[in-house]
Image (cartoon, rainbow, N blue to C red):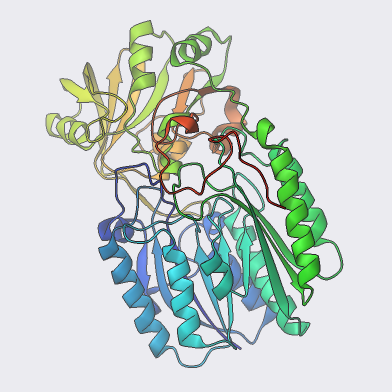
Length: 495
């Protein structure tokens, strides 16, 4: 059996002005043909690795590499980058010979400058090239926007089962679904139902209600006879696209009525939870900093909800930093910041120098202005981290550790997900997990707290303004289908 595989993955925040160009893909992971190793990067973060492992366990499978293009969350993908990557896929598809199946690792919430559903365009192109008789399967993030074009061209789409995500598990699930269908001579049919809703990110964790209720129902449905796969999609909250909204997709073995009944049931369930999903737990910045300072011991994590780099924000928010300086915090605080000019200025001054520098909001002043601080330069690095079993390689460029009073600011040139992790601070010479030395750690996310979970005494969500803020009603929604909850009082299900 020959299976072609590839990856085209990026999560778009359509409110973010920071576009995703070809340089970003090259910096964060781009390879073509034989240059691809499905087991490169972090195993825990790699659906391709998982798919390859399942194929190896099965035996008799030849994997044919296509293209691997991955970038983190940011603004829309430029048309130039999309066209280049699509051309690379087309070339590899034309050269690969006959295959029995194609597997694609997608995100599902990608938007391009010229099209709201570029991953649907990729699936459409692949289908046109391989024809109707070759299996085409895809794994996605469960924050994807599921579209008619995606559903029409893929035989099976499998979304993440948990938040925090487990891409390796999703890759396994996708491969196992493919082989179960092939070996069982099944005929997968799909039903998709959408809920006209968009909610903020604060209730997205699947380990607790209300989200857990929805995801648990999907898992129970998968145990029923005739059901191949069930995926639930709470679309990420900053995607203003023409088919936006939450989705349920169900695949059954040649039973379209069962598939549609289950998709309806799932969608009605999440609609009934919509008010609970809008409960906001974040608190004002001043209160959050004061609570962290007053905590009796241990590490307090402050979630910068409005500046989530994992959701496509710029990483430049200085709101929490400014408040820490204003309150003159006594405990050591760690604050990551993306600011190319400040990082380069610190590097030029050198370790040991005291500099006056403008920090934050250096390229995006939508939600605030830079602040001027006097800082001591404690360390300078090249910002390169090799891949390990748990994570992909990271390259965030020249990075400086600055001391502003009792606040240590890690200022990087580029945005990466590493700023959510102790590893970011370790490469700067700081043990961010030392409860005796560190009081507060700012993480630029509203849901990916797992990296500090073993050392966190208290988690405080901070209601900061930004391109990933929880106040979704304040965004200028233009393309999202209307009416939609909570934007419109007359939003309703039509089934």
